[in-house]
Structure formats: structure tokens, C-alpha cells
Image (cartoon, rainbow, N blue to C red; front, side):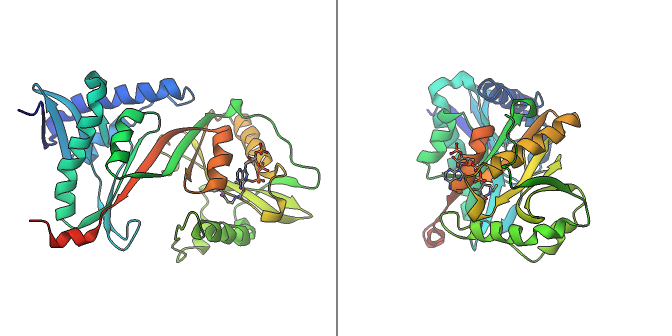
Length: 318
Ligand SMILES: CC(C)(COP(=O)(O)OP(=O)(O)OC[C@H]1O[C@@H](n2cnc3c(N)ncnc32)[C@H](O)[C@@H]1OP(=O)(O)O)[C@@H](O)C(=O)NCCC(=O)NCCS
């Protein structure tokens, strides 16, 4: 008889599930000490109201779970998809090497339901250093496409702007001066190797959001680069009291001269003076400039895994 039993997740499992999630968070915090104390456990009540949720039991004890949030159209393709956020899956360390197996059994159980419901694009955010459980996803056909990273602001080294550039914060009402650069960022992400399409229907509204702050590198009053940030933005998982970088771009002809590093450093000095402790960023690991740049300053603590299932299976499934 199989040692592990997979069944539907029930609200009664939440407190045991939280313990397993907190163990995973503590293990990640050991690898990324700059992470704040708060863990993402609060989301389990919400996820347990959703349709796709499985629990793994061994000898009558909860040893793991996997839950997905809502279902969207057009999720990384012309298909329905769903996402399991950070903390939406966890497997107990008590299982040792068998964690990989339990992660796989949970995916088998949940995907059998989701794919039968016509959901062909599945993504899960996982702690970045949990290679044991994450390998199981990779061997199940997932690839990594984005990451959240964190740093303590005081650990960011000081770099000043190269001589011919000036760093300035731009007040609300004037964010539109960065439209040109923001559009170049959109095109950068559309092209290879990222191939990330953006919905530009609300492009102008991006510059009318007063919860964001924009900072520029200027050459003779002309913006040649920007960095924008927001406090408590939902872009980063641990976002309660954290400042998050929402975007950054440096014109191609000015790259590799230290403008990017100076933008991060100048921003961090301002935030530090204002009493901020942590700075987060989320980026596509598919984007080589972002991956190489951010990992110099920040420690990745999540990876988002994605698998696109061949929809022709609809003709074969019973
Ligand atoms: C990321 C970006 C803002 C960096 O700006 P920059 O002014 O070139 O940055 P710096 O000159 O300060 O470079 C800092 C480091 O980034 C790394 N880097 C920058 N571009 C790189 C590239 N194309 N490939 C590999 N590493 C790169 C370099 O290793 C450099 O470190 P080094 O000086 O020790 O070699 C810029 O490359 C850019 O605008 N890219 C396109 C948009 C983008 O990807 N934005 C991030 C989205 S979240």
C-alpha cells in the first residue's frame, strides 16, 4: 500500500499546514538572512476556499499540501491557467528525501483535476533554496521564469552617479517624462530571450499612480534611466512593510557605465534616511540583464515555476 495518501485539502488542516510552511520559511531565512521575520502563512485561509487544493498524509499526519488560486484566461498563452502563490505549497522536512516524491504526488493529484477542467498553464512560486522539493517540479516538466529577491538596505554599497549624470526624484505629476524609457523597457521584454507581452491599454495610467515614486538619471536634463519603487506593493511576496522596486531601465548607449548601480545605491540612501529597512525586487529570470544585475545586490528567495501542458490531451483524457 502507498505510504502517502493524497486527498482534498480541508480548512481543518490549516494549522498543521501553517507549521509545515513556517518550517519551509525558516529554512529559506537561514539561506537568505535578509528576509523579514513575517512568513506568508496568512494566505492559507484564503487558498482553502479555492477549488484546486490537495493534502498529503502519511500515517494519519499532514505532511504536505498544494493549493492554487483563481483561474484566468490568457495565462502565459492562449489558454486558461492558474497560480499557486508562495506558501500555496509546502512539504514537511520530516520526510527527508521523500519530500521530492510527495511534491510530485501532490502535483499529480491536483493537475489531474485541473487539466480535466481545461487549465493548461500552471505556475507555482516556491522558496528559491528548496532544491529538493523544487527539483521535483523541474522533473515534472516545469521551468523557472521569475524570482523575488530581497536585501537589507544598509548592506547596499555606495556608488555615486558617473560624472556627467545627475540623480533626481521626480514629483508626482511629472512621471510622464519617463514614458519613452518605460516603452523601451516594454520592448526590451517583448524581444528575445524574454518574449513577454505587455497589455498597453493602461500604459498612460502607469504614470498617474501616486503610490509609486520615480527617480531618474539625467544627462543635461534629459532622462537616460529610471528606477521606480513602491511601499507594500503586491509585486513582492513579503510586501507588508517593504519597499519594492517596480521597474528599472537605462538607455542602451549608457549601459555598463555604472548608471544602474548608482540608481539603486542613490535610491537606497534616500530610503535608508526615511527609516526603511528592506528593499525587494521581482524580475524575470528569463531576462539576462535583470538576472545578472539584481543578483549582485539582492538575494533571490522565490522562484516561480511554470508548466504549459499540451492541450491536445483533451482528446485522450477519460
Ligand atoms: C539592468 C540595467 C538597468 C543595468 O543598467 P547598467 O547601467 O548597465 O548597470 P551597471 O553599469 O551599473 O551594471 C551593473 C552590473 O550589471 C551587469 N550587467 C548589466 N548588463 C548586463 C548584461 N547585458 N549581461 C550581463 N550582465 C550585465 C554587469 O555585470 C554589471 O556589473 P559589472 O560592472 O560588475 O560587470 C540595464 O541593463 C537595462 O536597462 N536593461 C534592460 C532593462 C531591464 O532588464 N531592466 C530590469 C527589469 S526589472
